[in-house]
Image (tube, rainbow, N blue to C red; front, side, top):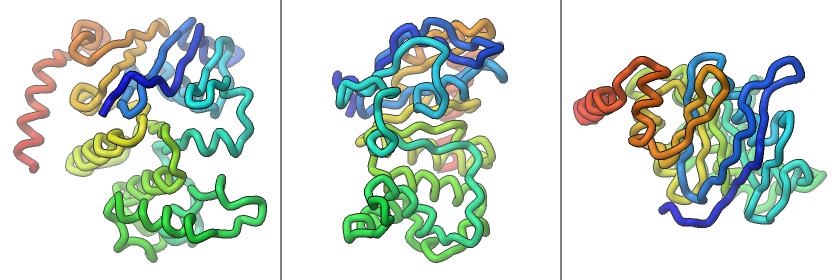
Length: 258
């Protein structure tokens, strides 16, 4: 359930790189237990914005505050920040011969101390994440042998094992077929009941169906924010589609596949 408690805030944020600014002077605040979805044309800077507000890359200017402890994220040490947010990227990492359980258990790194020794709580959180995502049967499988959809579920379980209030997703359904995309969308929506989700996507139907707040980046780096239904005109101008018709078709398709 969405409430009025804020978890993340930015003031006058400019993102990009030394040779190119992408989004300019962007300010926002995000409620806990909500889904914020970032969409935009290819090259508009969706991933750059996500990586900036998740602390992977530094902003060109501006400040980002993690409000649960009222701290600028640039002032947070690595362990504290790792307990605050987790990140699921579109391409799973190379994991060699690690099993699914071992990959998910990597989410417990912030809690294991410098020796990396697992406690009973670490085992519990890893097993809980397996169960919550519904992949307990995959526990002993070698991660690299899984399908793309299974791998993405494992990475989401790793984020849950990390037990952070804030989870970032970068193109979570990028390599999935349509039934897997729908399943993943519902899974992310369920997770948002207890977590705050911020996700980039090319999947307009996911954005329209599940976002509480939508950020639409246009080609000049301007970021338009609001509820999805309030941004239909913006989406139509940028993507040359009719969002309400697109959403109607998607709902019909979901009922067909369920």
